[in-house]
Every structure is written in C-alpha cells, then in structure tokens.
Length: 331
Image (spheres, rainbow, N blue to C red):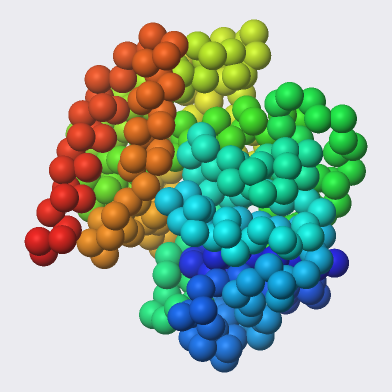
C-alpha cells in the first residue's frame, strides 16, 4: 500500500504521520526548499502524540507509482503542485482541500475516473517547526464516488476508509461524496468567517452572543445554495453525514434559539475538554497570511448569484476579510 501526501502543512502532516504509524508506505511531496526541514522526521502533537520518519519527494519521477494520492495543500497552491504531479502513476486521487473547485486540478491531471470525492472534519495547526502539527480535532473523514455516476466500483472507497480507520482517522464511505463536499463547505465557511474577523477560537465564537448570532445567520444563508441547486436531493432537510461533529444540517429549519443553544453546547464542550480550535482561516489572519476567503466565500457567492440566492451577511463578511487581507503587507 503506497500513499503520496501532496503537501506537508498541518493537515498533510497529520495524515502522513498517522498512516505511517499504522504501517502504510507513505511519502510526502513538498517543495525542494522544505526537504531538509523534514528529513529528521514529522510529528503530530495534541490529540495524538506520534512521530514518523517519512520519505520526502519533490517530483513525479520520485513518486513513480502509488495507489492513493491525497492532496492537502490550500487550493491556491494547486496550480504549482499540479506541474509536479504530472507524470506520476496514481491509481486513485482525492482532495481534502476546501472549496467548490478543489477537485479540478486532480481531474485535469489524472482524469475524473481516477478521482474520488472526500471531505474531512480534521483540524490541525502548524507546530513550532515545519513538519510538526498540533491536532485539535479528529472527528471524520468522508470518502465516496462523486455525483455523475462514473461506472466504477466503490470498493476502492471502502478499502481506503478501512485504512484510515486503522490509522486512527475515523472514516465513513458515503453514497454521494459531492453532497458531503458541499456540506463540509457550508458547515466550514460561517465559523471561518466569524472567527477570522473576530480573531478568536471556535469556542469563543460559540459562547459570545453577538458572534454566535452572526454564525447562525451565515449558516442559514450558505446552506440555502445547495438546497436551491438540489444537491441534497428532493428532501428539503439537510441530513448531517455520519460522524459529523456538529448537527448543522438539523438546525436549518429550527428557531434561532434552538440553533444558538446547539452552538453553545459545542462551545461548552470544547472549553470543558480544553480544546482550542482555530479554523485555518483565523490561523492565517493571526499570522498575517493571505486566507482562502476568495476560494471559499468568493466561489460560493458566484454560485449563489447563478441560482438567485441572496447572501447579504456572507458578502459583507467576505468584503471585510478581503479588506483586512490588504493590510497584511503594510503590517
């Protein structure tokens, strides 16, 4: 069993180390400038304490043949890594990135028939050094065939889910990965926008009356898009995927006070267990880096316009965060 993890950031480090510790043959694809930093090994801290010596490669020629490729870079870095991946012989590829266009790069390189859908509820921050990740959430990885019904057996997704579970990564196969990818984006974006603008943890947002209310407003807005597009089928109620850490899908038709109470329960549970969950967007803001707001919110806003769904609160947060990004170079 050979895995290629494309990207050695926090998320890539988690999957690489845990799979390697479970006995999988893993290599990590990264930039040449990062190779030396990884030669001493990679480490996961937080919810798991693991280290592993993992082969580091920088080209398709070094990859050769692999059964699975997992793309973990940010979508904005996909174009650069695409040229590195061309020529590699990959049986099945999947992206754990965020955004509506996350599978496009893999489709272009390997062909849609070799690409499966995937999404995860795994949160990790960069450690003190490159190749070290601090794991703060490890709730679910969903994989499955995508909408469009490519005539391929789902045996490959079942096998991969079993390998993830053996590595301590809770995983489920789903009948329609496209719906779950939409669910992940819509569940991720509201909290990412609010925590990034407030520069706070998820629990701080969940327990603050104004921030929590803004989260609920955003959640109702963004989930209206896949509902209007029929992504979740004929049922108007969005069903949470198996293992979902939060019951966002079940809140959509409930009164605000019910949704706020549910969000408060999440915040209280994180505080009680000492979890400090910083979504990647707030990590970028705190570090003064460009965020994924254009990839996530910008793409969603464009899609909403095509189906006539208004997003006033989402567009306001999008503009504020883009404005905040413009100050990073000056500071």
